[in-house]
Length: 466
Image (cartoon, rainbow, N blue to C red; front, side, top):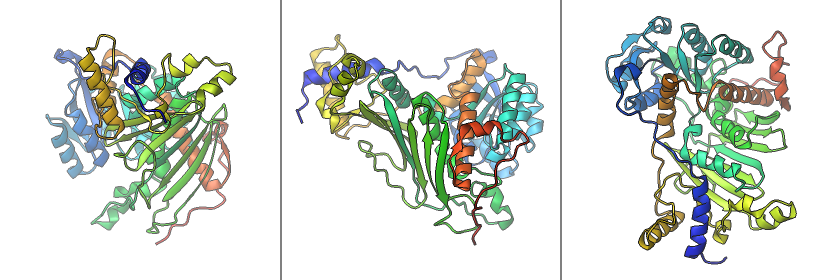
């Protein structure tokens, strides 16, 4: 493989710079008190407290009220966010406050629609954690509610859409740097039982609700939902079918959600999302992401590949080009410039990859001095060796939470709006149905579900084992 020289590097750096988004941090500047959104927070459990840690640093909003059915969670949530939010144990009482403009909802999945519906009817803007809804009936009902209350925002907690690294990847696809994207592989592996210790056994299902189907969509809802959304975004489409298998094969402790799932989604132009999530091994096999654990995606086109992940609040990405991509582009009549974004591509990117960097500190411009060019070349080269690890400016979770407040204040549309959230929820619902019924499910079937036409019974029900 030819060695990388500075001239080649500058060419590729220019190509990469062409797709780097000019990202501005969403943090609000000092504003008058009237521009601050007064919000309520419903569900200050484990996930809720993670969100509240970020919200405690956000200036665009103020937490005026908080609700949780468990006093200890409520106490911790108020301490985490700071200030003096009014405490509630009944979310309906919180929603009755006229001065609350918007609400964050972080309750268990089976309660998402119930609380969202009440919030919309109370005149509030809604941020709801994924999955947005739990059942086919709720898909249709939320669409009707949105038509009834069109001026109220609904945002879904799909934070990868707010990641600078993922935004760069999407722009690279749009500019043809991967050629035609045909496949995405995605995994979210863990090694553990996903169970929380419970002292009072009468509270088992309340604390471990993710393990039981009457409350949870299992691995598909809690983990795969994020990566299905990535596939929808990168492909620019939603699936037409899904099939898959799942089982309770390892954690035989009374749960009735699968402890491992394997899914295959097909998209309109034949693209495929190949997904797997297991709970017996957390190994990450993707190249170029040595610091990443458990979770990531491989986006594959006929001109190149991106390995990408959002891990511990930071996006990581590497771009690999296909060795014969220029010849393929010429054979199909595509201009080489469309694939390379008008610049020379490093031969080294075939084997070693090229980092996807959202920051400005690695960009090379014609105005740089010789020394600055050398320094940027050196930093990028070190990063390619895994020695430097640049980070996003902010955790995408913090960005999405603040962006909701800014959208409420400024009347803008969220990146992860209601349709994005519903498409994601539909994929989760149908993926679980495909595994239960051991058949290929067409996405068009959702239009008949929950409207008086029951879904066919499952061929086998997962056994509850003690």
